[in-house]
Length: 333
Image (tube, rainbow, N blue to C red; front, side, top):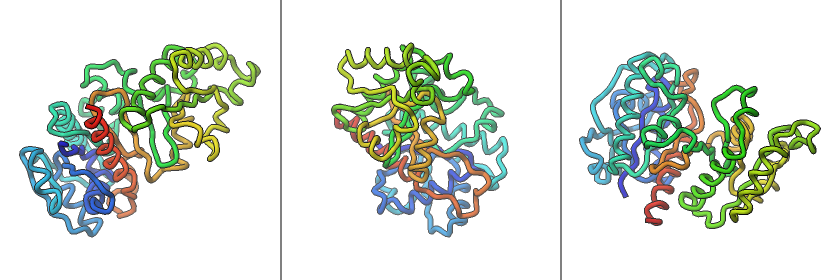
């Protein structure tokens, strides 16, 4: 299997330090070989800030990674900047964008088996020409897909949750929900659970939108008009799917044992329980793509960058999950 590609993220954030920590813990964490695109001096500075002994090997081809990974962190390319933790700027954003683009090119060409993206600052990237709401939408476009064909799933040891609407105001959510949206995304999730996560008969649970899942229409009608019909259609297709469930009960320990992924109606309905349960090990996985993409489920954390406080757990989990998914896909042919 080809090595994993890691984009460096915003060099002023915590991305570089959690990348070097991940490499330092590679053996104990059972990580597949990976390389970072660009930012050699940024990574060296991050290692110094964490008091890590780190050798970096500049490479010209990902094929060099297996022979080097045990003793050095491979870095593809010589693009670099002088970065200052907690002080993002346009030069750093340009490196983040170049790293993202080149890492994506590697996985599209097959010289990398998956891409793991370190956190970016969307406002900074927008200043250097990044026109997408987030990296999920970027990957959909480069793969030649419509944005709604790429589905964001947040995955941790305790929970997998999918927000059906993502980057929009809460007031817009009811208008964006449709029976077709729920059906389409549920199919993508079920297929990914089977091929990427080895769940031969995936079980899905669907949240209601309103308190108490609408309570028979007293608190809203979206459950009866939109969500329940979608669930019935999917059941008719043979899917193991339940709901709509009151969201305040779906994430309890007992309830979580009854499904493999929860489909939530909006961003915070999915991310609040995931971050409450698995903040330090939460992974953002993009489902529905022909390529494998994961990311730690947190931001750049400029306020703690360079202070030795950033927990690498989510980055380690993202790298591990990318390797596992890539291996599962390879086994499925």
